Image 1: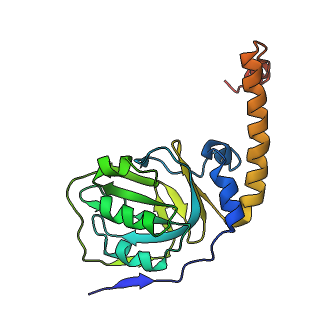
Image 2: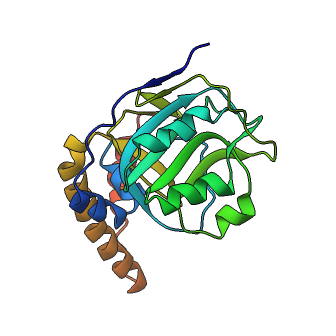
Length: 219
């Protein structure tokens, strides 16, 4: 019977970079990446809390969590376990126990393109858990699976070692080499948006850009 393909985890992203990213809205980061790099359809089930970390990826059969259990051996404090189960929600991949174990191990979050259970328990915690859906039926533990290979999560490709961030708006992953540029652009945009909010509150919102945008319409 096929076993689990195991590959070493990629180097962790610098902790200072991760700390910066945890303080920036995912929407601002997404805008620096042409608004086309995020996942679709995964929902945050935890109490609102930002997530940022280095991706340790898992590919598994729908409803089977053997590779997830083995991947704990490859996750370090600050890592995010990213699980591609093909979007299958016929059986939950994890529940309250495994997500608690990840939290206590110092992981930065879990992202699962599959189902979870024990949602009432997970919603009471700030440990980030994103999933496609819910199912009370528990997982199989038969394998096979792959650890630290490229995966697809809600249409978003995630490579081992990518930065992955999340908040209540959703998830975004990108190569660490882009971090400095993405952070600088997001902070500049945040300043501009704060200035716009101030102008709205003071009754002087300038919407003249709409004229320029309308003038360039093609139809």
